[in-house]
Image (tube, rainbow, N blue to C red):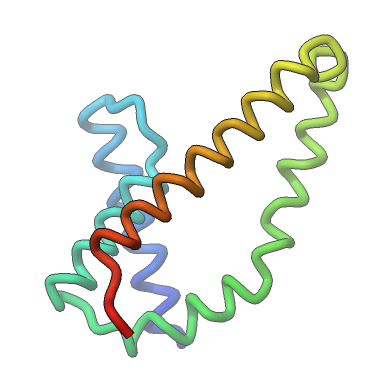
Length: 112
């Protein structure tokens, strides 16, 4: 499991370094996630090395959202002012995401 955690944090670091060096307007964790995905797909690293650690992170993922939820409350006045736009955009983006995911699955999904 330690090996998996090291891989995950290594790719997080790689993503942060790439964003910092290239001055990209993307979060480093997203770049790291894409990098680890590419490494897994190209078999540079094996899924069995990362899976135990990633399963544990997913199991406790809800704990990672607590700081964001607390931080969001610092913008209570702004949220109160723009709640309609926030709710509408959240609902529409969720529907769009589900729709696009459905299309992609139908087009590229495996037949079972």
